[in-house]
Image: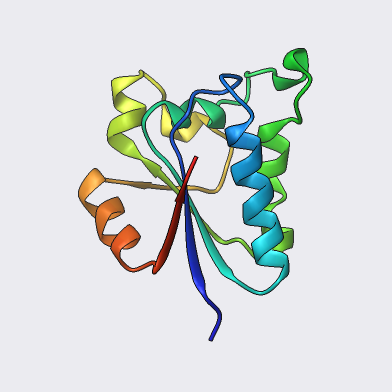
Length: 119
C-alpha cells in the first residue's frame, strides 16, 4: 500500500513560488508511487482559474500542469466550494476535473491522510 499524502494549496497565484513548489512536490511524490491528493482552499482557488497568466511572472502555466495530473496518477483533486463562492468563482467554469467539496468534507479527507503539507 502506498503512502497517502495531502497537499493543501491556499496561497493566491503569483504571490510566491509556494504554489508551484506544491505542484512539483505532488508530481514528484506521485512518480515514486505515493497516493497524492491536491486540495485547493482559501485564496488557493484562484490558481484554478484558466485566465490567470503565470508566464507574465516567469512561472509555469499552472492550469496546464493541473490538466497533466492524470499522467502522474494523481486522481484526487479537490476544491473548497465555499472558497469558490466567497470569491465569486463558478466551479463549473474551471475546465478541470476537480471535485467541489464542503469545508467539513475537506477536513474529513485531510484527517484520512497521515501526511499533510501546506503551501
